[in-house]
Length: 358
Ligand code: UFG
Image (cartoon, rainbow, N blue to C red; front, side):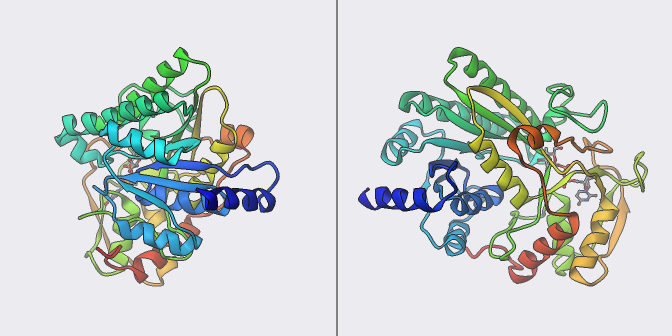
């Protein structure tokens, strides 16, 4: 305890005057996005406390983060639905704010096992809210998703675009439902401070190449799949559809570098205020599947084999956002290009071909 107060005193003298060092609880903090957020938090003097059940992550990711930030990360291996255990962890570590990332996120699996997704994602959030209520912690940043917009009516998507209609998977519904739960809870007590961050497509890795995305089994998402083909782990990329109404017929998405996304959380943390604020975290630029493959070829220096395959059920033609609100209110914007993301993803993939050590 004593060392913590001494560290706080030192940090307060070396961090920018407006930033107060905080203890932040990251649920799901051992995962792809969480590990990158810990690095961004540490660079700004904040200390991370991670609660993760390691169902889709490895403890060695935390070891890697510790070597990047040269500081220990408090880690608890626990399921958020174990409310008594979570209460004990929070009482012992007394965080000042929470970044809630924990949840299952495989779109296809959620269609096959909806009850698992509703139980895990919704009940984990309710358990967390109970503990926050009991311990008087009122600040929470929620990892939401562009999936809450369903099939977009118009592009770019803004925070006031229609949401919560036509969502194509139980995974997506859990994100929309949790947003609604948080809005309802905020109505009960004006001291709650919630920030709902709607991520577009997170890609890339920390520039060190020490941490990155490490999907279990066959990757569902485009960038890790392309990276594994580039590394020779898989034969070719299946391009799901080339007859969409887009620049080259392939699906268009707003790919955001994971370090930009991490900075977005920091900006949201610095601007938390009573009530609920919702932000798109994306670049505002659309990139097609073929454009992404071409950028990755430039990054890795060799051709990436691909074949055109049928459309994937549930996919939309194009999704990209206007990040203007986050720019205005949070003073945040993405700074990395798609080529930067491909280079960083390739560095991670080529130096860690089998992902994190067990
Ligand atoms: N794609 C391929 N081949 C692949 C994988 C993907 O062609 O092997 C295409 C898809 O058809 C789509 C694009 O690449 O056009 C991006 O697909 P991803 O699976 O990488 O990403 P999605 O946009 O489908 O999904 C992402 C997140 C979800 C989230 C959704 C919200 O992974 O968690 O955005 O829009 F719900």
